[in-house]
Length: 384
Image 1 (cartoon, rainbow, N blue to C red):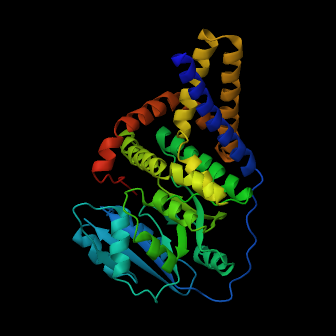
Image 2: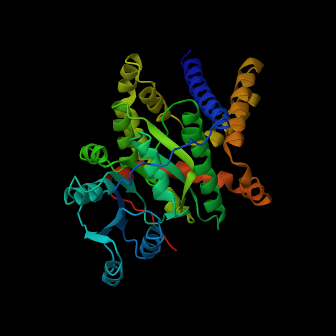
Image 3: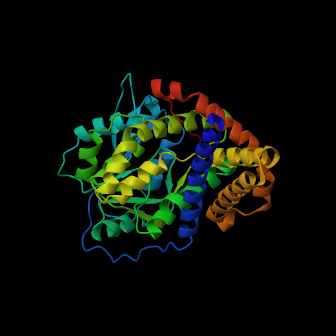
């Protein structure tokens, strides 16, 4: 009886994951970029860039942002553990450099420390970029200004890979686009809020500063998103407004990065499960959906685990049970395949599928390291 109960719980959980992925993958096919009118005024942007040991890439980012064809923005680089010669070169550019250091550093602490030194009335919009980001078009800030003129207070733009030079980087790039399909295109196509990613995102400056003051975890993007949705702030998504992002090339960096993400996902799931139910009864569907989303398996683990369990069910369970698992597997694979943009369907991607078992093993290793990820600051190394 006990084993049967466990089996039903596992089946119910994977059914939930499979249906969630499939539903939003299909919804993502119906996403349309919003048509925005030209803004009536130019808002002042604070482009905030937390930069920890980013000597290799920070100047490239600075030069890239300075190419924006927009009259009113200021780049603020929050420099932590950077080489003095790099800082000196940055100070020759039309931007601000704020040095930051703390024993228990986090991205949230760096951002909060910088904003506490900036006047509240100087800026209208906070744009958050990572040091490895590059903006694709010179009208990026203008497009964001149009979005805020339409009344939005939070906007996630399309972050996509700028490198696919290793098999791991290619799979990482595909993974991000799957998440874009599910949690951004799929959600906004159904009238729900987009998920935020941690960079290439913009907010009303005063709203952002007030909410960030209360953010304490190292997973500041997930915690911030929860706070926005609790206040019923709609998060818009602009799929055709693009920022390039460096994808992880090495297994070690991949494990560290995913361990940090998983640790914070588990933390937020624990803290907001009950609140999600309460918010549902208050009519806050966005918050409830986010609480559900926090309990999803990462897509790589979902693929690997559902495949193994379906194969096991086929060999060891009666037909009615193994049939249910084949349906789960079909929903998972269909959802993932639908969510992958057509441009990734190449011979190279087909060849890289042989690396998937390694990616699954790396994710399992990341799960084993989540305790370390909650105890110390782990930064992702970036290269040109």
